[in-house]
Image (tube, rainbow, N blue to C red; front, side, top):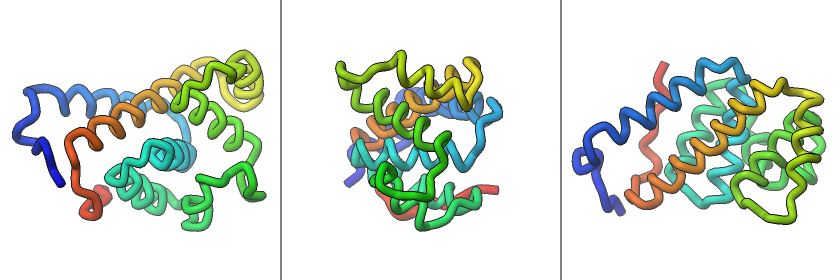
Length: 150
């Protein structure tokens, strides 16, 4: 049930969110990798609107349905690369914010596959999808009607 419609939002709110999204899309990180991360974070946060969106975006980017569906159990699935695994562990750590997570270890593992700039972009992308999840859940955005553009 929609609680706050787009027309009821404060001026500029969606513009700012879309600007950050545009910045992330220009950073050079792989679209399929980002969509796997967005799907995993959205599943953790239980944001059905974002799950619908990122399933469709991931398929559009060329990701397989099996890998998208299995991302909630990625630790048990044999078909994620080590790069994807460390990225998913990092995304989970920044989403759940468990004080027992060893961020130094995660960064050392990330640095095997990503530059420090890419890790900064990835950090922003994780923060951004967490923000989207929280906004969409608060606003009561209705799932199921999202269509990929372009």
